[in-house]
Length: 450
Image (cartoon, rainbow, N blue to C red; front, side):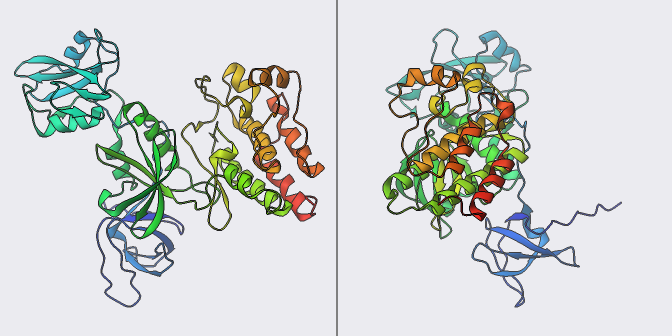
């Protein structure tokens, strides 16, 4: 029985697995790794009509391209699927049974907290090698030094270099999938050879954010720092494969092929963060219409997250970026999770976080709505820090007693009313992002922002 492939819909993104040379005038040539968008399904299931990033349209062979898909929620991706965390020496030996020379795992050291242990099966027994930190680097023999565990494992995979054997087969932690494999299978893996790193344009949670050139287009590149942030890096990329909206910063792909360079590649937002944009231009440059447009842009992006059951958790003007053509897009999905999750609150930005999220770790779309109200205040105060003249330790007690910030100077009363709705202490009384977007559109249509 032959299986008929379901035709891809118009708007589907695909990535080229091979080079394709134009054979007829109506064909669209492309290179391996290029991302294309399906424009129309043809009567012939072997061909699609597609466009490339510069808008050229033509026919492409279906068997030369792979559909780009969001990595399923709940998939436990790991850049280090061989890392088993806090397990004992005995547990490691049980996991490496039956013995197979070259089978290995890495665990946290039980005797030396902060160090690691490389456990390798070799000729019927398990050898345990202590990995120590020395001057910020990792080493086993104090001869070869590595920035992270991934580099160390790659080195000893290629060369035993003093170990009893080289590492040939990782013992994967149960339930994990190697991130490299999953990003490749779902069409999000980019090639390092196609990326040029140009200059540092910012610092992020993961390390440097750089301006790059990917196949002739400007891109932003987040560069991972070390093992500690590796899983956060994977979590952000995982979320971004599932999200696509004109008011969200778009993921272009992930590079995980080289263990010393782990990158998230996104569209480049030429005008930087919204908070810096507002502060550098001020009310002499930005009129009410522009401020309302930014507010609407963010509400549309957040409505999309709401509709898809995602909670951002760190919505603020610093995490909204502005494109060359003045479109505001929500970014920094490092904390984004499916709705109604809990998390460690110790690192939360107090002035932007809803009371119930700080007090009970309850995160929801409604806690994002609270943050959106603070972000509106930032927009209309041209980037001022919220709760001016109130000490940080006093913010939460005052807010829980019903305190709301005053309207920013010159802010339309109808816009201030929207902010106050977002700051209802009862999350159930706050509007949805759909309702907020509708209110802002009404304000725009009736020119009530003047």
